[in-house]
Length: 153
Image (tube, rainbow, N blue to C red; front, side, top):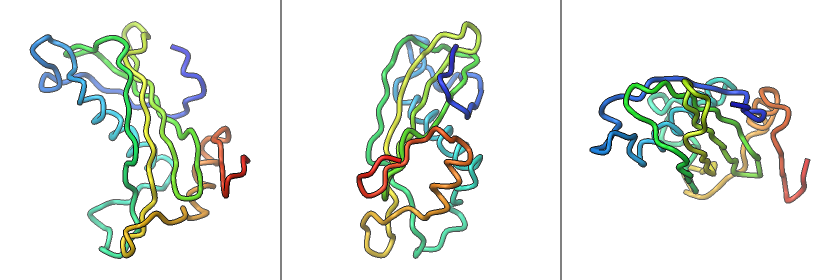
C-alpha cells in the first residue's frame, strides 16, 4: 500500500474476540484500533498524558468526532497495519486520520479519523493547545497543517 505520507504505523493480528458471527471484525472494533493508534502516535511525539498520573486539575482531550469508512472486511488472525497522522491542528483542536491495511495483501480495509478537543478541566470548556504540542507534532511530521486563529500556516 502507498501510505500517502503517514509516518506512524502500528501492527497487530486480529483477535478472535474482535470478530462477529460472520467471521469478520465487528464494525465497532475499528474505533478501538483508532484509539490504540492515537495513543501510540501521541506517545511517539511525546504528548501522551497518562490518565493514571493526571490530577483532577489537569487539562485533557475529548473526542468531538469519530468516523470510519469500511472498505473490505478483516478476519480472525489477519495481520493488520494502522497508519496514523494528524491532519490539522487548530487553536484548541486537532484531527487524526487513519488507514487500516491488510498487511498480507496491502489492501485498504478501512479509513477513518476524528477530531480531539483540548478541554480545561475546571471550566469544562475548550482551551488553547500548548505551544509545545504544535511543535512536537510538527517536528514529527512537517506536513501537518497548522491553523491558528483562522489562518493557514
